[in-house]
Length: 142
Length: 382
Ligand SMILES: [Zn+2]
Image 1 (tube, each protein chain N blue to C red):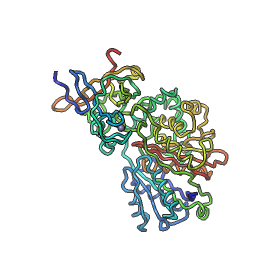
Image 2 (cartoon, each protein chain N blue to C red):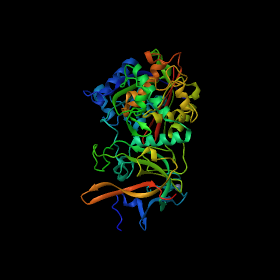
Image 3 (cartoon, each protein chain N blue to C red):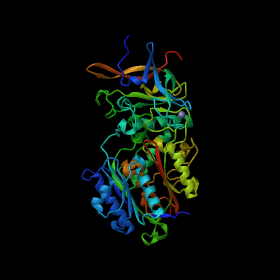
């Protein structure tokens, strides 16, 4: 199956069909970054290596975006068609918390600490088809 | 010992919506009012620091006030613009660069939430395009986590907003002057849960200015000079939880508010318990709750009780945002920090009318926090 078109291809690598987030890791102190950076704000080093951040995490904080963001948000929605979406920080194995869209936008179904896994969601439609971005969804099996 | 600096003039153009006035015009009105309060002319000002986020270069004010040739430094430090301008003006006087200095700010924002552009903040385009770069989201995410870690409930968020509008109703210069019921706030539209419509301040318009001089000569110009005991600005450290962060480090570090506050208390030689009246950045209810503890005024988690017991009311032990804060005044970014300073000066001069804190307040405190992680604190003394 071809991989979906992404708004930000550099952020994702595939293991088979499973998307993983890609960041960077400081060669000097080991601090992990997302998205990848070319310098370390912790120790000021400038030698960094690509780093696979995995595809599983737990919900660290969350909100629900209740209004249509202004540009540069470019989903193509209007105030009438806008659907609120979840946003959270997801804590990954290394301890880094990545800000991400959530597939769930129902306050009754979001809880700090719940296990999540990475997925790709269509957030925008163009003449060439759907554009996807990364998101976390409740984990199929914890 | 460095020389003390005093505020001898304050001027405000009320915040709100003023369709017929440019942002700069509102800045000029505030600046003229501050000069009048100090009883000196613009031609005696030796240096000026000023800022505006959306309403043009602050030094264009010289076209209104007079082209006297003075050095005028444009300040662009987000929500901390006013605090940064004030800290710079204080330093200029301490160094002897000028006898009279001005700090001024004004703004005029379009309606609705701010819409920052990722590249201006060193961030990739996708961060804005996919709907993650909103200040309101940050406030909600930080508040949600804080509530989880410290046992704060929505009750505290409602009470902060309720007190802000209650105080705003007492302030003839406030934008929002209508008290709101608990239910009206608690049931208002979800914007970014846990934060709702009436728990957020709105971008607005307005101007604010202060005139400063060495404390030793201040009484010649104003009967009630206010001494700037500390004016501190700090930026974020690696690991602090900041607005516009695509990720947060594994190891958390204290917010710039914490470092700015500690430095200010050290400079002033006083402690949080000595403060009689204070202004805390309240872009939203959650931020004010967090800032109460980050500035050292209570323990983390203690806020809910303080709010419920009325301790933060005008008559309480810890009166916060006596003029209604950002929630009731709105936020013109360039002017907002100086509005706080002006309110504290007004309280310390005991000229705050219906919203005056009781007794004879001696020490006041102001705090701003803004993107991308900068905080400004002042400690003021009668
Ligand atoms: Zn490093």
